[in-house]
Image (cartoon, rainbow, N blue to C red; front, side):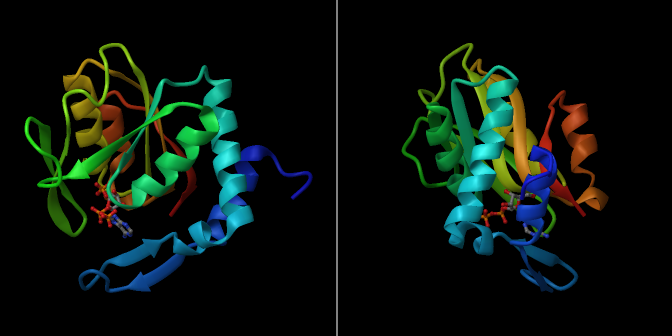
Length: 184
Ligand SMILES: O=P(O)(O)OC[C@H]1O[C@H](OP(=O)(O)OP(=O)(O)O)[C@H](O)[C@@H]1O
Ligand SMILES: Nc1ncnc2[nH]cnc12
C-alpha cells in the first residue's frame, strides 16, 4: 500500500472488503455487509488505525458512540485505538429505564434508538461511527440523543455512503459533518 494517501488507502481496503447482496432485507435493496472487513484482521486494523489517526489530527474526542448492531464493532475498535470511552447506542427495548429515545426511518424499516442518561456528560466531545450512511436517519437520531444530553458531536465516520439516499443532505441539515471511506 505504499504511495497511497491515507484516505486512498482507507478507500482501497474498505471497497475490497464489502459483500453486496441484492434484495435483502427486502426487494430492491442492495445490502452492503462489511463482515469481510471485520473478518480480515490486518485489513480491519489498518482501517481502524487510519481513521483514528485522522480523528486525532482533527483534535481528538472524549467518546466514540456506535449504533447497534454493526456500528458497535467499529466503535469499540476506534475507541480503544484513541484511548477514548465508548458509548453503545442501543435499539429500543434493550436498556432499563430511564432512557433518552429517538425514532427515525431508514431505507427498509423504522427504528428507535436509545441511551441511558449517564452515558455522556455535558460538554463531552463525541465521534459518531457506523458502517453505512443511507438516509442519514440513524446518524441524525444518534446526534439528537447526544445533544439532548449536552454532548457535542464533533464529527462522524462511516465506511460507506449511499449517495442516492440523501444522507449527506440530512447530515448537513442537522449541522453534522461526516467522513466516509467510500461513496456509491
Ligand atoms: O442512514 P440510514 O438510512 O439510517 O441507514 C443506516 C443504518 O442502517 C443499518 O442499520 P440497521 O438499522 O439495518 O441495523 P443493524 O446494524 O442492526 O443491522 C446501518 O448499520 C446503519 O445503522
Ligand atoms: N443498503 C444498505 N446496506 C446496508 N446497510 C444499510 N442501511 C441502510 N441501507 C443499507
